[in-house]
Length: 358
Image (tube, rainbow, N blue to C red):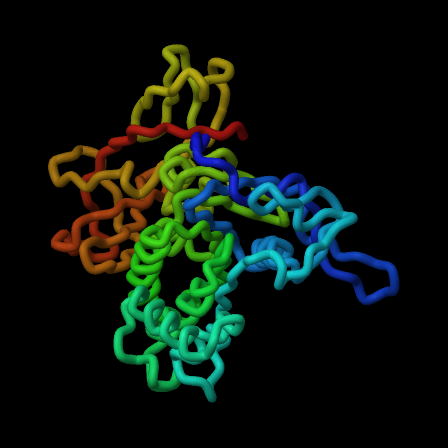
């Protein structure tokens, strides 16, 4: 559970949201009873597979979509409810879109200055140049978006959204058009920019590594519901549901049986259980084993066959199989380059034991 003493900036209370159906009067419900909150200056992220409803939540916060139940409060002001919908332009919410949405006929400085139209042109362009510098883009204001790389264009879009100093910044899959290596690096840079400016922000993505690189608080969504809103650490080590356990990180479920102690016995050995996870003795459960719970050890008598391998630069992600047929994942330093079909020694080193009833 996330504990924070900062005042709540964004509060979403039990909202339903969706889209009109094809038939007159029909409704396609997408978001179901969702509640969450975000404190001032924190970066949140809604994480989930495509079609889970995370972008619908973002559109409801913007005011682009009405809600049918509950309410959305921004800085203590109700901006959406079943009875009230404040216009998007009056919410002081900035948005960075997936496709950047930069104007190709305007220079980068003019793009950033677009949201500063209440200022005299010269002052707006001066501020635009300052914001370009804040996002690490010096001397590109006179150039056009097509003259920049994808990562640079994303920074221009970020500067444009932040220049009016919105109450809340929303980022809709902002790195999905970039290559994998650039995504995580740029996510870290964007986090630094947002933190340096004290900006409250909410991101939506399907990429967990992107979410972990940028967000303070992460919420996992599935089928229109928010199943856990927590720190990245807790999502990984203390998943609230089987879906979260399976969706976040690399891991497998192995059968086990609880015993007094409390402990759980699995094929690889006996693991201590936190009392909060202990139910009845001799209960059959599934135990979550992460790739970092299985360690490669040449001296271990426990052997497993390498079934698949994925090279990741600093390490390999191996799928290995025990003689029983049980498959496990293990992360191994890349200088241990074993062939598929080779048997390697492994040992169980699990500090966080998570179980789920069958």
